[in-house]
Image (cartoon, rainbow, N blue to C red; front, top):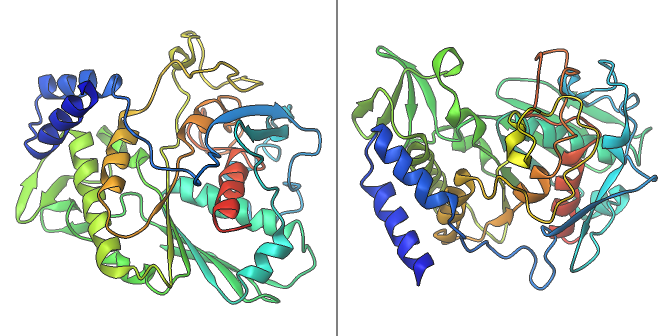
Length: 363
């Protein structure tokens, strides 16, 4: 009964939002302890609850021989001295996770189109899958195109194309007379997502950016402009627009839709009870039974939106298993950022995201 009351209050809060600091504090207090109902992972088999185990047969590919890794994710190239982060395998408690088999995958998805839609975490996952496939067929002919906002890798012998559509918010960000406007109720860019056989969506990190890192000047809903807004409320509104797009534009008999759970950051060691640390120089995962920081509030928002969808969307609920991987970030070995505790080294964690995607697609 307590959960129902909390969920009802959260719903009312999101619909009748304010942007004052005390309202954000109220939201924090409610959602910190909210034990929201998670969407089913895979029927009786839950691939999202388990532990990390060392596996000497990992990694799944060699970063020096895969041509598709964005340089910022190739931590070995930039001098990271340890490799143990590459050799952990996710082991679900309730069932084994199928090992990736690229030949089976290519045969099943021959002539198909798979698109990752989102921010740089989508790039992380896109690069990972391309490398996982390439490691099985290193001599197969491929075509790679890098563009803005669309990039692609095609495995020519099988006619399978992986696409990446970069859009950090999913909703549109336009330049207008008043400046850069993030339109919470508009997705014109969705035209490019039609016709795909698989869509994998992701967004969250850019919603938190402020100051000089914030790429918009105003938020807009209908005809009203806002200089700022409670970011969880804005996130909820943007995701609701995305959900409406899915409901209106996706034919489930033709397109399978996935949403990647919240990918955590590890800048604050207090999240795993080591307040003096960040991800820098972390050499092993968190091995506790429960991640101290708990469920991110953004996860609650995602879960709420997904639970209201009329069309089937598979929730790749990788948040908890990713929270454990404080050791798997580029740290100071990205060649781009002095300290990167938000993206992931490749080979690494996104390979597990793709193993679960592979399993969810039927192996």
